[in-house]
Image (cartoon, rainbow, N blue to C red):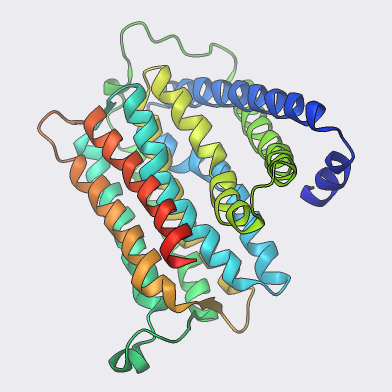
Length: 342
């Protein structure tokens, strides 16, 4: 779809491209509104906490762009792009997106539910970094490339199935009474109709994201922005647009638990689903450049730890101060990527 979109958009004048970007952003925001509304509706009618709906149904949908990009890159002989996309998306999700959502409105934390999900979140990041380390040559320093082997891809996919099964099982035993907030009006449509609306919201988000990224890329090239900077930012940020639009819409509507659940679930799926699927279809495994060991992996683990411990605050919220720190953390990461690492 991206190749067709790029070929079509390339022939449009810049003024039309800018209008196209504005239209794509509008469709993206409307899709996010529909998705959040129907996700909350399903959580109420199924008596499942919003954070668990966010960590499963919503996350599976919003992670599809990362999965499709990474698997396609691995199959086409660019496995390093698959790993970079997944790790970059985790960093973007946990710092920039949670930060923006918390700045809009402090995000409530349901400790009884998020504690278990947050430890899985941290554990999946550590598992990825641990498997990727070149243990046989670690004594000589982390100066050579490593791999995420194919067998670990199948392991991740197996763990994904266990994670989804356990989360659904936990959801069925949850106390749904804490979902019903005063003034909350879920969709009264039949459940199949509500589910179709949720899928429509996902389709609008993913479709508009796929059209938005080549539009912005072409406009940036015409504006003289270096191709290296475009590649380093638009791939990870672009595939994280579904999470961003969903988190912003959820926070704005007062459903911060959905935003937290979506990001935690999306990051877990970035390891187990995105990296797992990409590694599983690549016999030689995913290449891990040395800079991942001393820069990208440490940043990924650091931001997940910051997010984890921010949820332990006495206020039981991820507040605006934490949100501002997370956004600044992401901006520092991008700045270092361009000035020191590149």
